[in-house]
Image 1 (cartoon, rainbow over the protein chains, first blue to last red):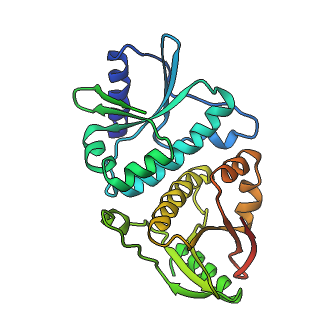
Image 2 (cartoon, chains in turn yellow, cyan):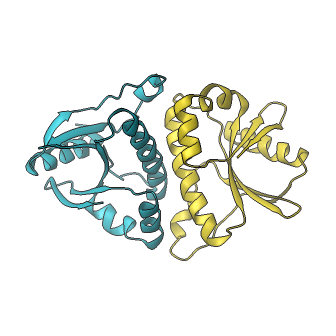
Image 3 (cartoon, helix red, strand yellow):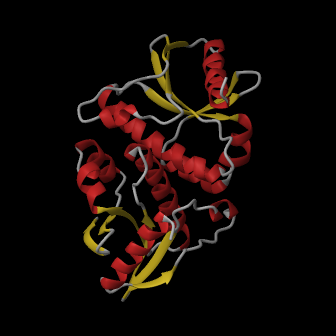
Length: 138
Length: 138
C-alpha cells in the first residue's frame, strides 16, 4: 500500500474504533462552477457520521521534508474545503487529521497555535501505528 | 534561467517600471520560534518600497497542471506569511502576484472570488511577457 494510503487508512480505522461510520471515501463535493474541485490532490477527504454528527476529514501525514511547506498546503486546503462545505452542507464540520508526533512538535509552537486559532482549525490528533484517535481539538 | 525565476524576475521588473524600489529579494523574516519559516519553498517573497509604502510580494506562476492545487498552496502561504509579517512589520502589506491569464480564467470564478474576498487577499495582476503590472486589486 502506498505510504499516504497507510495514513489515510489509519485515520479511517481510528474513527471506526471511535464509533464513527465512514460514509464517503473519498468525499466528492458537487457545486455549480466547481469542476475545479474534482482535483483534491493526493490526500482526499473522508466523510464520517456518528449519530447526528457529520464530519469531513482532511488526512495529513506530514511525512515530507518541510513541515512548514506541508502546513502551508494543509491550511490552504482546509480553508478552501471548509468554504465549499459551508456552501453545500453547512452542518458537516471539517477536521484536519494530524499524526500525534507532528502535533506535539509542530502545532504546539506559539506561532502555529496562534495561526490555527485565528483560522479556527479543528484537529483530530491520531496515532498512525496503533490507529487510534488521541485527541479532538476544536 | 529556470522557469520559476523568469516569473519572479518579470514581477521584479514590472514593479520597477511601476516606480517601486526592490529592497529585499528574497525577503527573510526573523522571529523568535521561527527558524521554521526559513523554508519558503521554491517561490520566495520579494519586498519593495515606493515613497512610504512598503509591500511584500508572493510571486506565483500558476504553471502547474492543477490550478486549484496551486491555489490551495498559494492561499496557505499567503495567510501564514501575512500573519508572520503582521507580527514583525505590520505596516508592510502582502500581495499575491498572479499572471493576467490565470487571474482572468480562475480568480474571476464566483467561488474563488468569494474565498479571496473572505480571506482579504490582495493581488498584483501582472503580464509575464511584457513585464508590466496590469492591475492592483485590494
